Length: 398
Image (cartoon, rainbow, N blue to C red; front, side, top):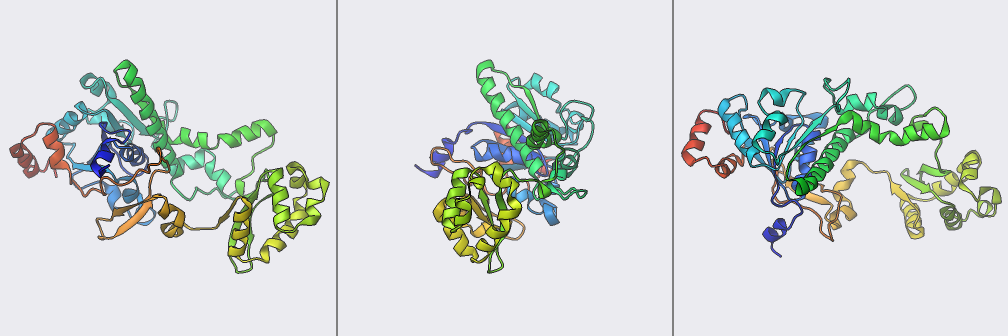
């Protein structure tokens, strides 16, 4: 099967998405749809999305979340630019936006207005909060991690700390994509679109729901994960004799027996008081020093080899930079190579972590340059070459 034929057979082939987004939450929702085969047209300001120019921890936002998309640069403050956007929306299946509350309304792109033009439109609004007392607030990933309890659970007591990734932006985008897919399926039955929403705060609450349930079940105050009482006796990071570290988890009574046999811990294997997990948890102070000494006598590779052979859960302690050369990701199509427009280099970045009937979802469209697809987008909605040139000259289109 040719690459072109393969693209046509992607699940969302034929679905057109117009994306008014920046930063992470909105682009990540669009990325899911784009990787699944949708035609995603990213509407950028004339100067291009400011996310392209972020430095520091934001330098990776644009390259990670904007592959497989087209770029159309428009001046949306100009009536002609607004008209172009409306014509695209008229032919779209999905609109995604993640701007501050009221921003789309001011441009004339409120859902209630657009549904009159395109009754099949699925309009996905990604915000800080769903409807309620906070809905007017502007939120960020870190804001909702703090107010939603995730920073409390991640940090040390009295020292809340955000997670080491934009997990709420990404989760909110994923929930937005799920809502879009559900609305597309419903449209198959009803023939009409709808307004769907996803938010950062409610996504954070969903993430910490397990801890809320824990308190409801146990009746005990919650402790941050950094000082929690683990549900399992052996669920820790262990130092090895070559100054490396390996995480090891023993999460069942069967695994405990395997673990004791593999590491010649006969005294523990024969001790009936350690046969059940909950009893082992109460005796952690007794067993952990012995286990640490045993595992600490091995090198990282020796320990991982033995754990691999036994089938027990383990992990080397890696940084994101280690994943570029991870043999599993590289062998399985888990990394997608993109070009970096600013420096002419290339980078292998994670693809969607799904497999569809043995098929991984790869690259169809490299990272777009600013306005790379403006000409093609305007042609697709009926603008002539002369009209396009006039719009460029007027600074409405780039």
